[in-house]
Length: 382
Ligand SMILES: Cc1cc2nc3c(=O)[nH]c(=O)nc-3n(C[C@H](O)[C@H](O)[C@H](O)COP(=O)(O)OP(=O)(O)OC[C@H]3O[C@@H](n4cnc5c(N)ncnc54)[C@H](O)[C@@H]3O)c2cc1C
Image 1 (tube, protein in one colour):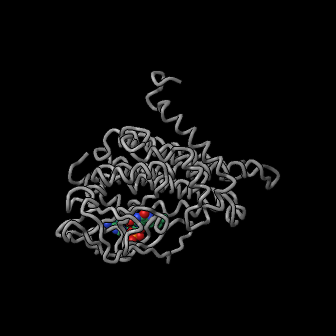
Image 2 (tube, rainbow, N blue to C red):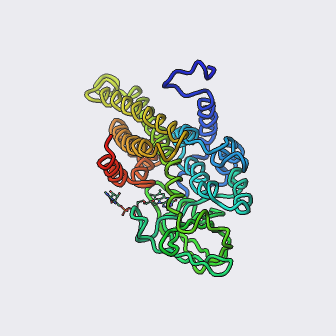
Image 3 (tube, rainbow, N blue to C red):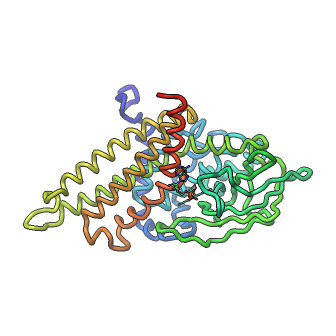
């Protein structure tokens, strides 16, 4: 199909090509995905294959080896939809290259960007974003990590927690209090004073660690953007990538429905296929409907974010809530349809059941997003 023939509500060829490329990569990981998804550290084979695919070049702008002029939210979203359907580990590794480096790409000093971003694009360097602390999650303004300038250096002290890629990352973009504001600081992992620990194991294993920063000194040009303006870079990151979580959730939901459908068609009970029994067909149809509705909003929001991330943030937030809540419901129904086979450890549906859950908590929990949407709606109207 050429792009002139693309319908109003269909993806242009540029994105369907990317979808196909991502699906091929994700399917090619099937021999190692189950092992990687049980791992709390970066799987070297998944990393090598993802690097060879060149897909991480979507996560940085063209100036540093990226595929497109600017990071494209719709491209990230359609790729995550395909990757997450097969492996949470693969999806997270892909997405974090963008999430962990976006502030740097937008506002970093040329010297630091030229050093790191080509390596992030090629997956030679793993990126991470450090916001959360042991006592601070949604209410980020309460964070206690500090940044203090001394001569031509900036000294960072604090404790970041639940940091994706922690322990394996080459760079951390860390949000710290500086004076009356908050600054984003780029900290190479091998800087003296950086230490990582892995005290947390979550229900769907994930490369996560705490990052302890003890008198960490970096050159002043490692502060990303203006002093005290780090929150706007975090907001810009969310505005670009939040909708891609929706893409991942749609991919997981569709994978769960496919498993439930195959099971319901293949299993006989009470003299006929499960797919024709009681409320099972209705559940299958309502899951299908919910997924299509979530996907439509997700693509629309991602296309808006690709044009202007901040202007479309309300849509990205709605898509994230809709798709992750839909995914939770669909995966739960799929498990129910599959009965005991749905709760058997080591199966694909059990993996999806566990991996769907955290998406409703990170990058803005459902309630936090509704809270900010409500404030915006009441203040500005429709
Ligand atoms: C798999 C995973 C990966 C993560 N990766 C990273 C990472 O790479 N970098 C990073 O910095 N952090 C990361 N996090 C942490 C994540 O950002 C936090 O979990 C998230 O911000 C929520 O914070 P919290 O868990 O402390 O929950 P809390 O802030 O304690 O909130 C708990 C619950 O309270 C309710 N709530 C809170 N505030 C409000 C409000 N204003 N209005 C209404 N209800 C509210 C919501 O129901 C919310 O779910 C990750 C978390 C997970 C699970």
